[in-house]
Image (cartoon, rainbow, N blue to C red; front, side, top):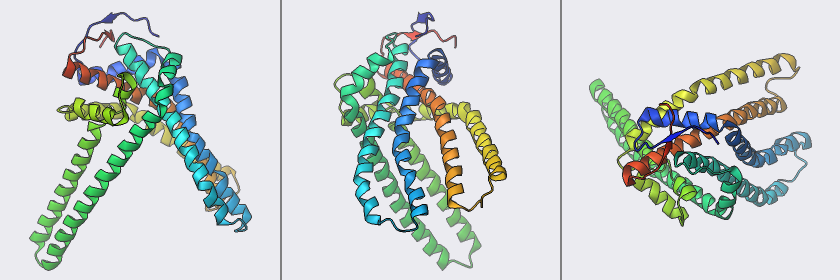
Length: 316
């Protein structure tokens, strides 16, 4: 835990949110990184269990019955659900620790893990409900856009010789796409802190935590969007560096390994290498994004509920 002095700060600017997240992450780097490694590894195990399948299919040359793999699907689903729940819990631990720093109520990783142990499946249910909401939104919008696109295409076909009409219809299609994109982004932002109430507040269910996020973010969608945009710019250099490293390693493997680039085994090797680099970058970026979420949640509660919390002095 950091030993910086604290001071009472009720409202944070957009820049304060990002700066505070960076500084809290920096001050607690070791503890957050350890939890992030566990979260990443738990999310990796289901994927690791799938790696032998393409190798078996390649070397067995079709001698393995597909029914055997079908029997393993329920086992893999159980593994995926359990590992996902464990990963979600570790993500939430980081967010709770960050909020504890903000509220001047610091906890250890062990204390947070003990508190979250009976909540593991509640967290998983909350994420599953959020997933269903997201799928439902996308399905509804895809149907609406498809219907509108069909109407526009029909009008365009009836006016093939009228260039002006076609241009207007194209512009209408672009506007509809932008409106749909904005609608999706706004809805997703309303659920940006959906797991924070469950991580911080008492006696919250999976459905109630989603409702709390919807309530807290009302009227602050634009503000949260700016925070996320700035945070993305902060992480952009790391993401670019990861892509450069992956490209360099891919070129090295292609030049040193005497294999056909189209060989499935070689393609699998390249994929595993890229995926491993992605996991490594996730280990370092996960605490930052969890810190962003916790600071946004703190700020929303301060603005909406006038929480008398103490924020560590961040020199911002």
